[in-house]
Length: 443
Image (cartoon, rainbow, N blue to C red; front, side, top):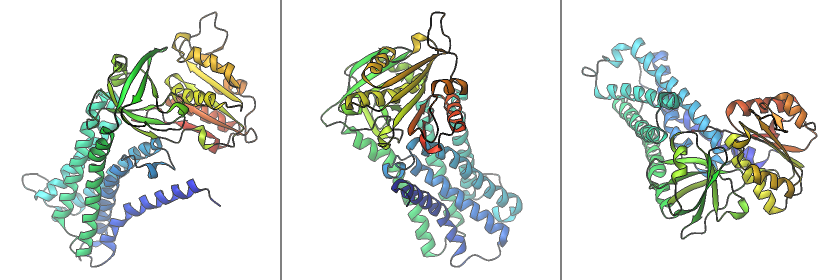
């Protein structure tokens, strides 16, 4: 029998596919306009399916807890990117076939000569393309996260609105009352999702403020922020999870950022986030002061050892700031009196950049924890591992791996490190289901 999470995942996947395909009923059921031909109907099917995909993008980023639970919200955000490309391809193919194969039906392309609803559809396609291009190349283009996020939301909403105007204006397949009702329901659902994300969620957060009570500098240009709840009980989280954090700004503004909890889950009334200065917002975290107000939307994520109560042990492989969620796991294990064997491989650029270096050494004395610190640029007197994590190093440091080990493996770090570790573990026979990784650069 399939486990409950698998059933839930299958349910959400089928629901998503059903919602994408449902608009095709506008073409296949009821009275269909005559004279279009197979090519024309195919182009219309591409358009309806593409618009449904684009509309459902708002659902993928709405952080609906039940929908994200089987997958992890980081996985859904990556799927969001892939779905955007698929949706753009579908809508683009729809527009190309209609314009170049049936120019008499679509009319002139010049905006001053074309019908208003036709221009709305063409502008919607352009705006969708701009939104996706800016998202894929935000960092190379030097667009600040806050500016990108606000423009992303505004332009995506504008593009969807223009696309709906286009569909309503054409009215070719939506003439029957039930078809119009279906399209109205879809439109209202999209509007509802936008309202939920931009109004309802921030309004709820505004009633649960947090206060920064400590700002603690760490090694490796990192800073730990300690938050306590104001007028509420706080929140509970599982070690390894994360939340969206807003600092010194209203929750209605587009200034929230995702960070892993680094504190113990057994002390959830007091939240800790350890943030490495990597640019944009993270470089300004050190300027936060005790007393500043904060807002927290979470917890999210499935990157947690709490999901594997029967594991015989755990192996943690972290690079750089990827140690933050792992530190939450280790601190939680300490507070719970964990006795299972643990192994930590922690990679850093140099000894002074090893975040939590002293505390990790102390945890090695409190837990059954083997610690391997890997230094890329090691000084002559360094007695630990040197260089970068690779398959040979993992084979030496982790001699007992494979399907019979009974361990769960947690990997967190930049994408190249994470992929290398995953490949090395799989090559040595570790089952796919026992290797868990955090998507380090989610937005």
